[in-house]
Amino acid sequence: MIILGIETSCDETGISLYDTNLGILTNKLFSQNIIHTKYGGIIPEIASKNHYKKIFIILNKALKKTKKKIKNINLIAYSAGPGLPNSLLIGTTLAKSISLIYNIPSIPINHIEAHILSTMINKYKPNFPFISLVTSGAHTLLCIVKNYGNYKIIGQSLDDSAGEIFDKISILLKLKLPGGKYISKIAKYSDKNLNFPKPLINKNTLNFSFSGLKTHIFNYIKNNKLNFNCKANIAYSLQKSINTILIEKIKLASEKFKINKLSIVGGVSSNNNLRKKMLNLTKFKKKIFFNSKKLCTDNAAMIAYTGWIKYLIKKKNIKNNLEIDIKSKWKINEKF
Figure 1 (tube, rainbow, N blue to C red):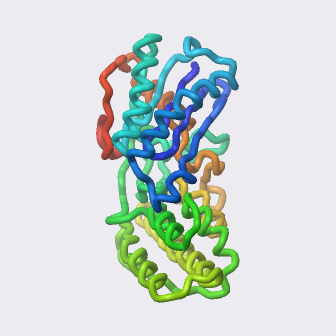
Figure 2: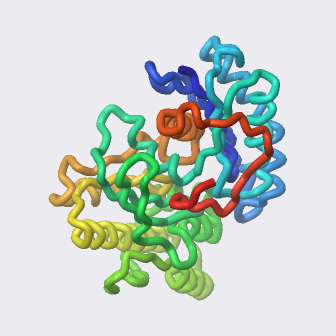
């Protein structure tokens, strides 16, 4: 079975072809990071405009690389939420257009659920139940993954996401997007820990809060000269604070629910410092699962794979609904 995955939830345009026997055939991605860096953040109108410009080009490249034709596709999976409404509409419209013309069933996919299930694409994968930390540019949450399609949210950010803080501080430091990548690079040159705050770290809650940390760093930047050494110290201290918060919440979740299997997904999970610290925790020895870095950020392979899982669950109940349907604030424990 060949599944076409379409990802346009934010500013990454992704097309993937997934073979249920062979795995990922291709996973094409166009990133708008360079475009949005000069604006100091993602501009929704520009994001959707670039999706429109690039999506057909990327689709054709994916088909050419795999030597497949549209008629070889058996199922279309597309990001229907959460995300930027206009960006979601581009991918959804493409999915429904192909579905109508070629009579191929299509299925809406929750972008966050796809992140959670992305570790299941790998050869080594966690057994149910396991705890999943989703940490990306727009979301930071903890959930118990009981089975495919069965998730319990046990903690989430009360304000900003970890990835959002990395992006905003990176822009203020005149670095590039994605922030986590460039913060990590410059942090290596630090010679001082600035001991930035770690909100909610000593509270008996699995929720996160990053806005206080953001405000503290904003004020620090305002009151200090931003030479290279200062930037490196800010980057190191920011990374240390966020990673410490994430690790302590994971440990608390494991203790509360007596689960020591863990997956960490989303763009922030590609941070080398976070990976190193997590892998050093004896509690999760050989029971912690990361993706390859290509599958950490938004991508269409995880959408296609999740489409296959949904197909296996629903099978004949999948209806070829041609309505242009999106849900920009779709939660993983909500039905579409």
